[in-house]
Picture 1 (cartoon, rainbow, N blue to C red):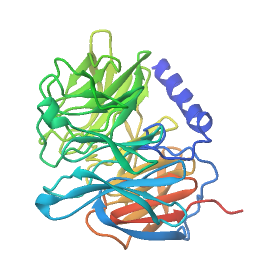
Picture 2 (picture 1 turned 180 degrees about the vertical axis):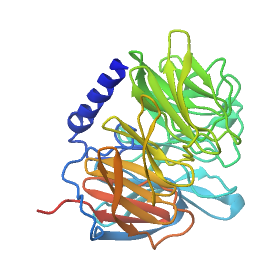
Picture 3 (picture 1 turned 135 degrees about the vertical axis):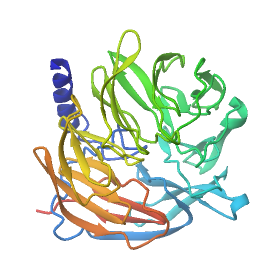
Length: 410
C-alpha cells in the first residue's frame, strides 16, 4: 500500500513539473499517451464558452483524433463509395485550418461506421498510422508521400475484426508496434525505417481488440501493455516475449481503452459490455487481480489518472472518481454521460456523445461541470477524443474540425 501511495505521489509531481513545457500533442492521448495535457495557463472559467478560432470541413470523415507536432496538425479521414473507400492523411495549418497537403495512404475500412479510426503518431519527420484494414503505413511529412506500407493481415495471416482495426500505433525505440491478430503474432513490431518485421509475440495468437498499447514500467521493467480479445498482456519491447498474461473477456472481445499504470506493479484496464474495470498486479509468476468494479462501463472513452485519483465512465452515464488502490468509488458526477476524457491542470475536459464539450472542476474527490460548448457542426457520432495543444482545444466531428482558444486571459 505504501509503495503505491509513493508512486502516485511521485507521478503527480511529474505530471505538474516534469513535462510542463510540452505543448505539442504528437500521438494518441498526448505526449505521454496518458490523456493528460501538461500545459500551464489554460482557461479554467467556462462561464462563457471558449472562442472558436476556426472551423474547417475536410473531404474525408473520421472518428480519429487530430495530433499536433512541429507546427502542423495531422489527422486522418476516409471517403469514397463503400467498396472503394480510401484513407487520407491531412496536414493542416494550426493558425487557419487550411490544408497544406493530403496523402492517400490506401484502402480503408468500409464496413459499419465507415470512418477512419487511427490517430497518427508523429516522430522524426514521419507519421505512422494503422488503417481499419490493418495497413501499417509510414508517411514522410516533409513530402506528404508514403515511405512504406505493410499489410499486417496478409504478412501475419491475421483476421480483421467486427468493426475494423482501431488502434493507434505505439513507437518504441526503432519499432512500430501493431496488432495483426495472427498465429504467434497477436502483436508485432516493425522496423521504423523500412517496415521489416523485427519480432512477433510467439505463443500469443489472440485477435485484436481495438486497443492502442502503452509502454509502461511495472516492477521496474519497461514493457508493452495491451489488450487482446482474450487477455491483458505485458510484452518485452526488445523481443516480443510474453512477460505475463491475465485472462479477460467481454461479450464482443472489445477492449479499446489504453491501459493505465496506477502503481509500481499495478495497471488498470476498463471496458464496456459488462466487463467493468479491473486492477491487475504484476508478480514474479504472472499477474493477479487486485480489484474489480463492475459499475464501470467504459466502452472507449479512456481513463485519466490525476493526483492519485482515477476518472472514467460509469454505468448509465455518470463520471466516476475511483481510488486506484482499492477500486472504491469516491464520487459520481451526473451530466457527463458517455464522454471521452482529457485531463488538464485546471480539471477535466469531456467530449460527450450528445455533442457537448464540458469543462469539469475537481474539488477534492468531487467534480462539477462549470461550463460547456455545443458541437453543432459535422456529422456522424461524436466519438473523436478532444485534443489540447499550444493553448488550443481541437474538436473533431466526422468531416469537420474546429479550434477553440483555451489561453487564460488576465
